Amino acid sequence: MVNALQSQVSRLRRLLAEGGDVVVERHAAGYLLAIDPEDVDAHRFTRLAAEGRRALDADEPAEAAAAPVVARVTGGRGRRSPP
Image (cartoon, rainbow, N blue to C red; front, side, top):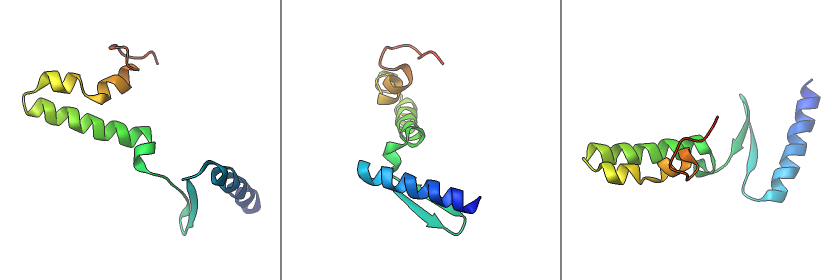
C-alpha cells in the first residue's frame, strides 16, 4: 500500500512540475501540497469576506456589496450561483 501511494505521489510530482509553481513536499505526518494560498478558493474567499466585513463595520454597505467576494460567490451575475 505504501509503495502504491509513493508511486502516485511521484506521478503527481511529475505532472505538477510540468505546470509550474506547485510542489509536493514530504513531511513526517504525510504529504503537503505547497501552493500560494491565493490559489486556493477557500483562502481567497476568507480574505475577500473579511474585506467585505470590514467595509460593513465601517458603515460602507455599498463598498461591501461591490466587494470582489460578491462577484466570486455569485459568479459575477449579481445573484447566487446554483449549487
